[in-house]
Image (cartoon, rainbow, N blue to C red):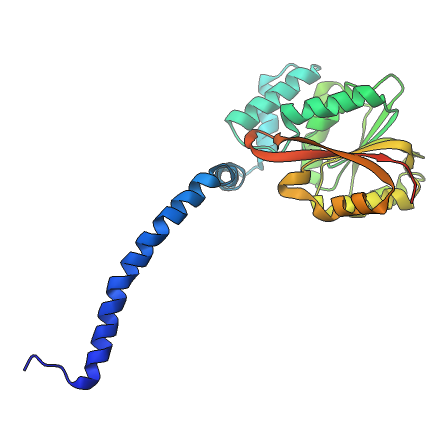
Length: 276
């Protein structure tokens, strides 16, 4: 009476075999998952701080993280002291919420290049919260002019307040997409040429905007272009063009992602030669 019909035996054996194999497969994957978590733990931490924490606090406070950062800056910094504002930004980004500012390590690279080149006309693409804007503004020689472009109105509003707090009321913040602003720089903003460009906006826009600067004859011979986040998240098409076109001398300053020393990153330094 305990015997099963022959037609049901394969089904019972198969289900029993599956039940026995599944835990074994799961156990076999545990070392792989653990290795993955250990190897990429810094990237998981970045995702947690930059995405998950932001979304929760956006929901709880009803205001974006850039505005929360500005409220912190306003109550913890010394007005008119650019360096103290930068340090307060860094403290917020290390200990409160992650902001994709330039950060102290990359700031040293940009500072050195500004000192070396002493540019008179500087274009920044991607103002964000104004961190790099006030860093550049405090380093420029007398008579130099800085133009900074931000397409996001909310971030531009925060940046404008940060720039004023630092005491740089005369710097020009242009609101709008870079692909629309760059063709208007000569006629609308009176910027005939640029001798230093800092790119820190959407990485997929680097190549397009570099070619727009070329097409509208905005690059002086010897102009310097500095592009952030070349390694992470990266701008492969931009670097491929730079290396292949023959118009630039270039080098990579290897460093780490802002506020995450364990994640490799780099800044590209280009020098416009105009040769083809």
